[in-house]
Image 1 (cartoon, rainbow, N blue to C red):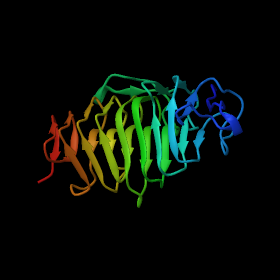
Image 2 (cartoon, rainbow, N blue to C red; image 1 turned 90 degrees about the vertical axis):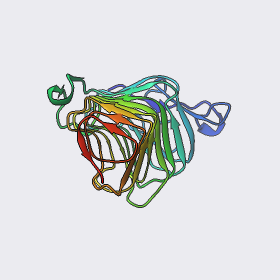
Image 3 (tube, rainbow, N blue to C red; image 1 turned 90 degrees about the horizontal axis):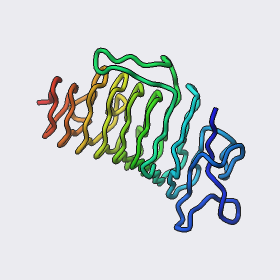
Image 4 (cartoon, rainbow, N blue to C red; image 1 turned 45 degrees about the vertical axis):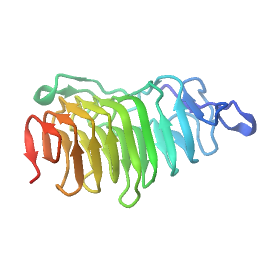
Length: 231
């Protein structure tokens, strides 16, 4: 398995760019660079702050997450790079076929955290590409992310998805994890095997200025080629 760690370049053992942004790349292999981060996957973010990819990240594991966020108030900027897992998919919608059935690894995950921002890149080949789930916390945002060839593209509970794309995911593109509130705007979902965008109840998810090819309980100014709209 290719390992990825947060590189240590500043004094006192912390990986940091000159502007205070912690860097994540595929160079620091074999040792933990952050306090609380063990060697190899997952890269574990344990402190609030800004983090940025400086290379693509590739994982061959079907069971181990790539990046786990275990602190509030974190911004993770993929900086135009990709996090790529072992799942690949061919076809789309009803013809979609994917490898590695039953895999559990996520690309990026945060549970019960608030004010998490994930932005500017691609996540593909996992169980869930980006998973920001919290029953009580608020302020989680996914912005300008392309999530494809996963089981679930992007899951956000109590937050927002904006300017993002979800395509060829084996289950759903955008969803609110069966509960919680989610605002989806200026985004595009297509070719996903089940629903491109789904809200469990009409009151929980607000869809605005999106385009999708298969939706459940979508609302407002979104367009959907096939689906059930809210009243």
